[in-house]
Length: 222
Image 1 (cartoon, rainbow, N blue to C red):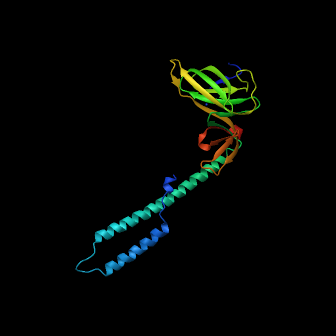
Image 2: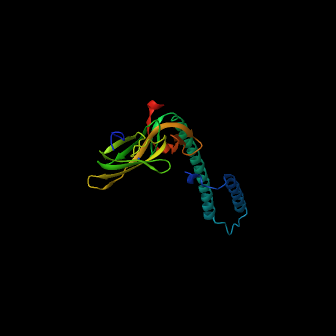
Image 3: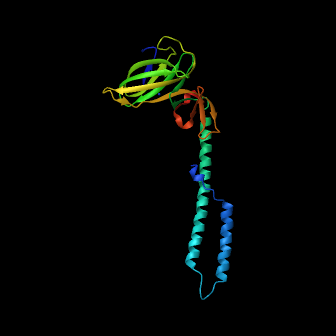
């Protein structure tokens, strides 16, 4: 991974959507069977009832019951998945993780981001404050693969910016001048986890990230 520093050089609810009441289905099915039995007992021998229609109705009721059972099983699986996801997220508390995102916290003169490029080229890196002011901007040459950019909190004009949350923007072009898609990431310690959210939300440097945004976990940080 290439490291760049700003001091050295000038990114199944649908499955539960059935509103059918299982109790009503059971009651209707029992009522249907009672009516069917009564009709069979009192049918005219010279003009018997259509058994094909009875069979079709039985199949329809059976299909509805199977669907209800399937929905119940899906609800159970979703609940188990959410429980497992919550349990797994608790293990990240206090860990150092890398998440997809363009924000990082400047603390004691250090803010770091990583980004990945598919090809070598040049990039313009801009760092903005929480209020949208451009704190730093510079041009860099990079190789293909993972890159790390570290900012020391010193702006382009030499001003030292206060600790806080900053956003990075990386615009890259290859050797032919074509735009390069660059994905940015940030690394930090998980300070808190909101398990009430689905998926759970991690707080990293006063920023919130969902657990599915986690790209890398540093076990040494746990």
